[in-house]
Image (cartoon, rainbow, N blue to C red; front, side, top):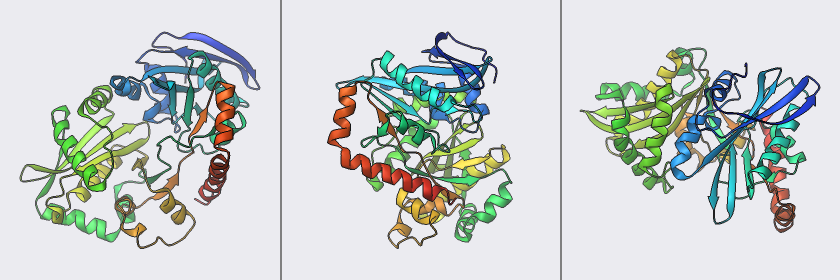
Length: 382
């Protein structure tokens, strides 16, 4: 895509690659439609790298710094770091990046070098990087450059993906018979679907909190201000949707979805735990996937899945009875398949911290590297 900056950029670096002169540019602006458009136009781009996400995280104290790489005025790579000050110092995080277009010799290595350079320039104590979902091999490039497995980051290790581009009739046929039946039953039992707006976020948040309490997990987003910030950042571009399953005008279940590029993400859900026999959750997901198919999205992403279950399914093994009763099975009944995600890695610009981390966690780092190798092998079976 042509580099036509829509905000202030400064030239940071350049390097000769096999394909020409690569130039690196840096911006710290909260909005950048040029970067977002690049992400939207590549299958590797995800909303967590967008300025939408940067603006959504701003109320929590996160600040963006963005690097783009151009070759002959075409954007070929880039990443967005979100950083935050804490008692440990400045901590940076690259979620679903760097985004590197294929076909450019040495570009992945250059993007990795820029990550390190920018981490030092921004005086980061540590930089955590989790590559895009479909770039497991990027983790190896990071490893060769001193990025070690992050043993403490709370990131998703797997997700559940549905292919949507062959239409909803095909998607419906790949659902379990039970899922198709209960969706039809929900309609017969009086459940209807309504699209919500900003005024309905409080209702959705309470439904989400109810689900989190039952599952014994911390809510994310953790408060209404974060949810409102996300809506205000994503809604102007049409990148967020809210569905409610209702009975007699009472919301029973809610589903918050994020649309970006070719991906429809069923991001957060909530259920009051009442009227379960009417299957409001099932109908909300069923109708959301129908909407995504009709709108031309290529993939449906449930945003999370259990890693051990994903490994078992990809390896052709039967799930244990306990696994078959977990909340993740709900997603699996909609068809599709699991995907293992690249491991998060951490880089310490300070060589002393880098050495200390490697020394104190040597065994755990080795175990994590072995798990990465296993993941690459299992994912190759997909």
